[in-house]
Length: 368
Image (cartoon, helix red, strand yellow):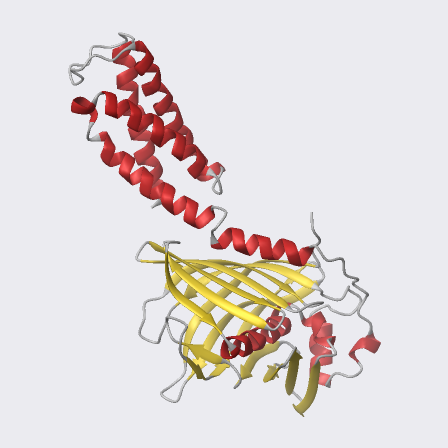
């Protein structure tokens, strides 16, 4: 879609060169009947240059290309208006450009999910936190299976995890019979003051869909928009808060094992490869069961304390939730799972609704 859009801009820009050529007598163009002054010829040239610059900015300035696009639209439509009988069909291309600009503003502008996410991240990173080294003594209160996991994950001898930034790709769907939608996502988690900030861009039949999860302190929200313009989900309230508390613990277990020494987690050994964790954040206390393999790696996380929301985020149903994980890989000295699923287990039968692949993760970031 992006390539088609930029090709349209380039062709539209090249056509504008015809107005410049006629004004300065560079070529005989019988298609253009109306005379064009040299002053207007320069406007046609300016529009061509700005349309080409807009096409380039879509790739090199993805956050701000629409600013150039506004200038290109103004110059192009001014030229077209002065030669309306010859150039009126160029307004159709400008209408497409206008739609693109509106999408650019809504998806990347100051009121977009992206901007809201980055403001929240900046506020969290503004804090200065200490990151002492994890020692064997820090693991002493943990069940044997969890101690072994932290050692396998490379936590001992490394700084405690106070935050991380991760990037994912994968696919997601709304139900067992729904179409899978490809997505990319970025996430920041903080553990000195528990927070989870998650931004996802997906597409359904080439239509962009964005989701923003913000869990700061004790409160969580989830907003979903189609084409960055139409809000289709607005989830909040105590059920959403509890659901995101489960997710925060899950992220800790999967992506930040060194954070499992957190004093707000109570542990109970079930057997040699299974433990129960109870996590408290503010007034929310949730629990989950962790399963490990022979190598000491976490392979599954299951909780009965998470809520599944309806597509509009208005109705919540308490449903068993699990995240089987695999494919461990090292990121520097730390070793974590890079593939996983998110699964619901309703009475009528469990199904995966999300498949994730971790592409990048960084720990203990600071404000730049």
